[in-house]
Image (tube, rainbow, N blue to C red; front, top):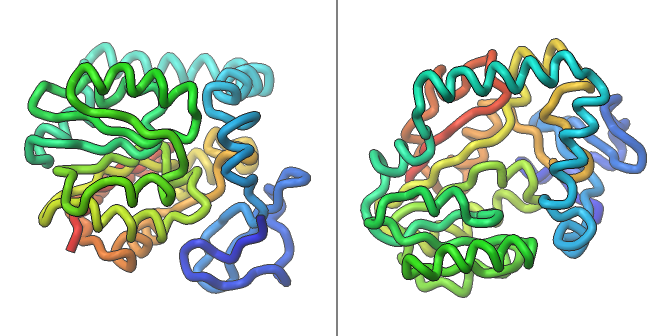
Length: 266
């Protein structure tokens, strides 16, 4: 697959490969909007089979541990401490606060563990490319009146009725999606008026990325195909038919490798 910039559509074939590229995967920094993206991402079929998340995640952790064991263990410790101190599930907290009760869709739901944590007034639904993970998610969701469907988002979203969902989450999804604008536009059809979407993606503008360069933990080849900075993520949503409702400094703090956004359909 050879693609143009997923944010502005500019054809960067004549642009030099970014120095962070890893053969055979070619990163391009768009000459027009400066989004960093993978120009030749794998096909959906590869992501479903040999590059499925459950097969690559453990390998990615092992690679990070070998590359820099001190930073690896320090990072895990720093993540563990605040989780234990504050015991706060940010995603569930946001869903309780910003979503109306009803069906909630997790795009890229993996094995369904995320939505399975929700209280009973939310009915879980999911889309998952990996057939094995989708089977696990469907087992969980069906017990609560929902279901998970296998396939890529653009193929599965038309199977849901218009205005069906009270809310949608996309955590650790948009960085994997070759067609992010098309997916966002397609989700609007299945959302109720005023329904919201919660997004979590790596923050390409984080200080950690600026410090660590090509060794930044947000780089994953070839699974991550889009690398958003805050302004680019905002542009993607506003041009796709959404109003950004929450995306302040705390949601995109420069010391964090990730950023969170709450958006509402127009």
